[in-house]
Length: 157
Image 1 (cartoon, rainbow, N blue to C red):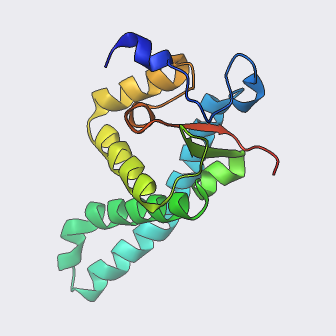
Image 2 (cartoon, rainbow, N blue to C red):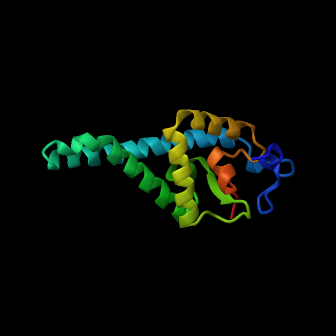
């Protein structure tokens, strides 16, 4: 990826210089949204994984982290596909948009979640992703850059 492409305009999105209100505070809001989403996933995933472990006479506890991760993956895909934002993002007033300005549909939500999971699974990629959120023109994560998406402050409809 060429350095100039990281700052290339995305035709359907507000310009960060002309409309900075769409990007003001987005990195902080993304972090708070991530914390809210993590709490939701743990509140649902841990009891579900525990129940599964008990129902399988403790054999299911061997895949406890996979069950919680699966709940998180499904939660993220379904909520983003259903409104272009997780519940944490909705709480903080941000949503994901494609480069043409449209909301994310199911294929984009799935791709975004896969890229997010890869970054979370490889800590150095997650660090790069956090750095790109802080330093890129459109406040994009690494996955956002690859997909041509970004998070913006939710516009008034």
